[in-house]
Image (cartoon, rainbow, N blue to C red; front, side, top):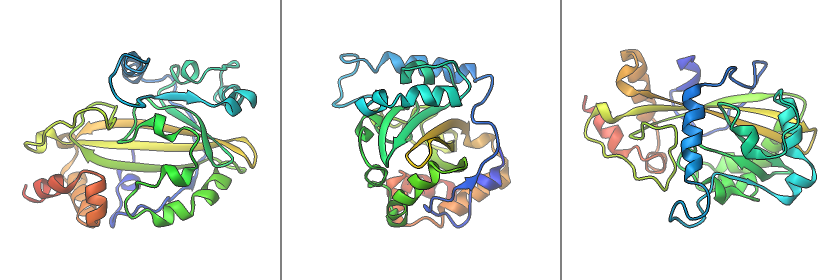
Length: 251
């Protein structure tokens, strides 16, 4: 993990995507991630959890008709796999498939504050609707989709501080209380895109990792604080960082 590539000062919500030539997947996948995926999967079937529209996975009729999951599985180095859960259960990363700007299939075990089921069939612009200070991001959504389904792979890093210590930061789970720095965790997402059908379809991999804040070096902690101190009030509220900002500036 190159910390300086993840945390920027000042903080920005601009979708800074860079060309990527590395491996798409962690091989072998982390046993910890695979175990956590199995745990999250217990709660997904209907009746297991009493929340409206709870869901981690879906695949549209269009995704099935165009065999998008099969195509993605081959690109990711597997024999043909037709079910999104079967495919993503084999890898450390989560996966979203975008076709013509819409989310047509996904299995996201470890969402960062959003309910994957709510994204089904939505344009990328609408998925980004809640993002604070995200006007530029929303306006660029169509161009991002074109870029993602073009000739190259791209990647970017997203991060936050949270009291969730687990890989899943699903909005339906109760947020742990903040009592001190020991409750804070540095959450990162390494997002990698790859084309599936040129000009139309792309895959979006999300590799989530969580580190205790106090396990970071002092320089890393200071840079996180400095970045948070540049965030707007809207971003702080959106990312649930208002109280966290006060805490890290008092220590």
